[in-house]
Structures are given as C-alpha cells and as structure tokens.
Amino acid sequence: MMLSKPFDALPLWTIGLITVALIMLAVEAGMWLGRSRRRALEKKGEAVGGESQAGTVIGAMLGLLAFTLGFTFAFAASRFEDRRQAMVHETNAIGTTYLRTRLLPDPFGADMRRLLREYVDIRVAAVTNPTEAKIRQAVVDSEKVQEKLWLRTVELVKVDQKLPIDALYVASLNEMIDCQTTRLAVSRFRIPPVVWAVLYEVAVLSMGALGLIFGYSGRGGTGLNLIMAIVFGTVIVLVADLDNPVVGNLQVSQTPMIELQKSINEGPP
Image (cartoon, rainbow, N blue to C red; front, side):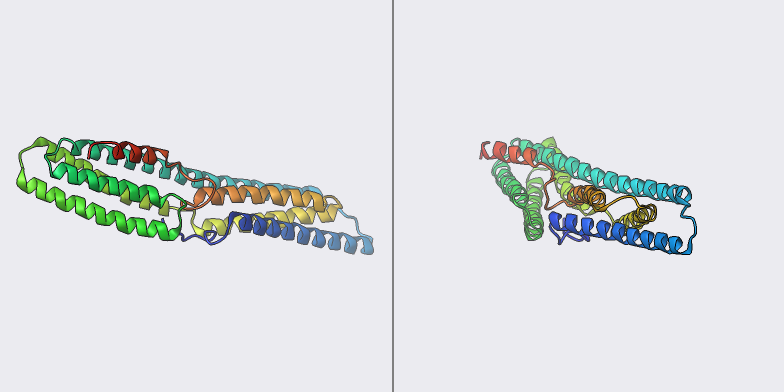
C-alpha cells in the first residue's frame, strides 16, 4: 500500500494542470512550426499542400494515443476492482473466523473475539482519512495481532486436539491472515512508470503533430487547443485517481468492513 508511483506525491489538481500545460505547449509549439513552414513556402512562391498525407499520419498517431489511453484506463480500473474484491474477501474471512470463535471453549473463544475486534478496529482506522504513514503502521499493528491470535490458537490445539471445530477455526484464521498479503499485493500492482512515460510521450508527440497541421493549414486556435488539453488532462486525472489505492476521490468503499466492525462489537464478549 505504500506510495511509490510517479504521481503519488502530487495532488490530483496539480497533475491536471501539468498535463494541460504540457498538451498546450505541444500544440502551440506545433502550430508555431506549422505557421513558420507555411510562411517560408509562401515567400518562396511554392504551393502549400500535402495536408492529406500528413492528415493520414496524424490520424494514425491519434489512434495510437486513444489505444494507449484506453489501455492505461483499463489497467487502472482492473486494479481498482481487484482491491475491492480483496477487501470483500478479507471482510468475509474475518467474519467467518469470528463466528467460529463462538464454538471454541472459553477462555480461548473470548480471547480470540477480543483480538479479532482489535484487528478489525485497526483495519477500519487505517482507511479512515488514510495516509502512507497510517497504512504502514496499520500493517505492523495487524501483524502483531495476527501473531497473538496464532499463539493463542497453538495453545488451544495443545489443550484440545480432538474437536473438529479447532481444525475449521485454524483454516479460517489462516485464510484471514493470507488476506492481508493479498490486499497488500493488489495495492502494489500499479500502472508501471514506463506506461505513464509512453502515454505522455505519445500524447505530446501526437498533439504537437496535430498543432503542426493546424498551423500549416491556418486552422485551429488557442480556444480549441485549450479544450483538447482540458479534456485530456481530465482523463489523466481520472486514471491517476483510480490507480492510487491510498488517497483520492475514487477509493474502494470500506462499508462491508465498517458494518462487520459494528456487528462484532455488538456481539458476545
């Protein structure tokens, strides 16, 4: 869950502004070159043409840009769904483990339920106004509770090795512990920096080439360029938001875990 990707240190609005500025710069630079080329040809008295051939190339570049952007968005959306499923799976695993503790003899059952309540509290607190530091600390605290649960389970098995419920409880506890590894793994599967680099490279070159055609043909304008830049910047912000598992507007809802916390806190001690 640690922040580690190119945009993690920047607010989303900053990413949007930087993207808009880059696209505007690329298009305006292309238009300047196109106008310069057009004036040079007019001074020489040569015909200004070749737009159809250039238009074909620009169309191919824009198609490649759309493909790259679509691929990046699909990657981020897929990771978002993976995080959602991992959270639901962990919630179910904790809930099953908690229910099975009610079949264990006391004082083991009571101790397990107390530790599971503490465990869920840690998980919920970590995702309430999350930061990188809170997530790191939550992982450490969760592992400590897991160790206590496992040690208590070892004591239970040593005392009573015949009850079938012991084996079922151990299986559910093991699955619950594995769920943390799964959630950490899917949170670290992010859009690779090289994909971001390729996306921006294709975008800047495509928009620069489009500006070149605009300038050469005498079409386009700052208003149109700004609209294109804002649209592209908005989509990039959306992708970056989806890709970030810790902060942002598009976060996995923790409602199932919060409801589990309420349920087990109201349960038997």
